Length: 321
Ligand SMILES: C[S@@+](CC[C@H](N)C(=O)[O-])C[C@H]1O[C@@H](n2cnc3c(N)ncnc32)[C@H](O)[C@@H]1O
Image (cartoon, rainbow, N blue to C red; front, top):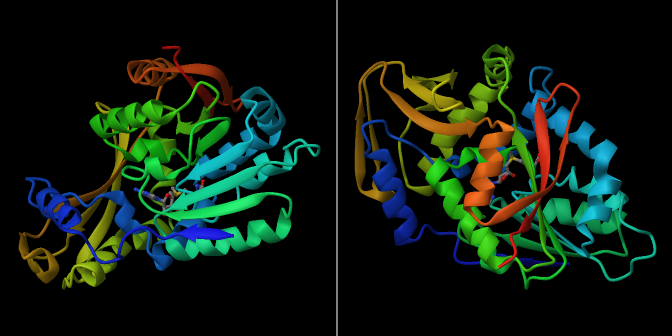
């Protein structure tokens, strides 16, 4: 079992410049991968078990029903998961793999090293005939670390693609398409547009797990960039933006507060009531997503959804060139 850790865990100048820029906007913004240290990844696992959080349950139900068809239609030999987290859903695809196939492998890429190592150890124990590999990296910058094209099924679960801003999503899809061979396939989970009340409930659980997850990003920034955010001085807020068709998570300052991030050489002065955006999560119509794919040179092979049309798994190939 091989785990490629990538560059130093210390922030590069490019990372520092990007965060400095996003925190200096009129509406300061923290990119969502800063949720996921070991505490944040555990909190996300707790979110997936909440009654109000429909996406995980629904995506698993779709996979339970359609995994054999997905595996068969993809005709692939190598699984690759982006943002693999605890690595539970990939098991449904591994379980559907043809017993006769010997030469199969699975690569798990995530930004959280502990979760990559733990999930790989569990998977390797349970699927001894499959070759596992881990990549600790960023799916926005590290698609070239996934190995060569050819019969790969690259999966991206949980609607995580919706956390990218539309221009970032297009750049991601274009880069992915550029690296895909004619026999590679992409399987992507997307959350569908639905009653805003249902969506908002999923991000405002009464137990406060999502609020803790949201505030944890400040602790991550404190550690990574020598900051002095007081997470208790911020309230969680999540609302559906109908114009953009996305949920937005924010942290609202409960009092005037001045934050110094020494590692960024940045001071952030916030007034009571001012906000930091910590996540968007786009909800899609089928038309919009198919158009986004087509714009990046990708075609839909198959579309799997639940009876209530809450969530979809889309099987995609590169357009013929
Ligand atoms: C919403 S969770 C989904 C986890 C898992 N795939 C699932 O379906 O339950 C997003 C996962 O992507 C990882 N992640 C978020 N942003 C990332 C990035 N830019 N690069 C790599 N991993 C990222 C997180 O660590 C987390 O495990």
